[in-house]
Image 1: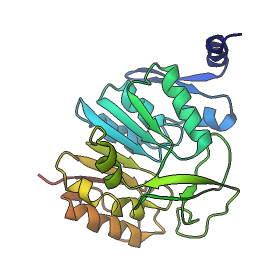
Image 2 (image 1 turned 180 degrees about the vertical axis):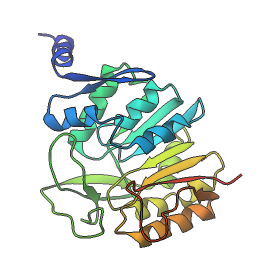
Image 3 (image 1 turned 45 degrees about the vertical axis):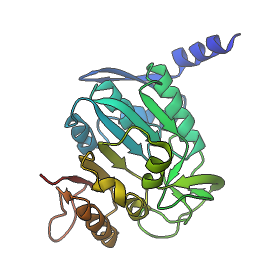
Image 4 (image 1 turned 90 degrees about the vertical axis):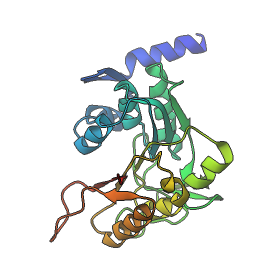
Length: 253
């Protein structure tokens, strides 16, 4: 059997098709967790879907902590973006992301990078709570979970980390208009590493997930983005946070 035939066989047997208002999305779903990721694409974070729907046609979307790429795939299918750059350091999730992009014929629209985005350029350790396809809770450098506590580590591997500012400086990639950050605990570090980037008015909005146990982290990120001209659009109400921990920062007009 040729490599192409083998890929076709896998695709016909192990894909899940998500129906959206913009058309179908094919996702690799040969494990229970991958199938769950596919089935919940539209329901797990409806605010993220709504945010993507507000993109301007032709925007460049950076998906940081892309996991298996459900939102990268949705942005590509919605035809809102000219280019997606998806960053995911987990080897399992990265391979599923690449495979799903290929299944849809979008390898030319979704550029994938097996990198950890951080506050500096360095070699360090990627700590993972679980080592399977579609798993979450990875931490680069410091073994910290999304609540700011110690991560229960099941697997570790060496990894390359780089800040957003440095990545842009070194490689001059398509510049981000929209940035999603979902990294389970290192949000502040990533914000520190994009201070120069958010000063650029081409950055229209940033969606970042911060757990409600880390109010100080939200304050830290808010200060960094405010200095770049991005205002917090959905601050938590007094007395507690809402169910969603996705905070949207948009360019001040």
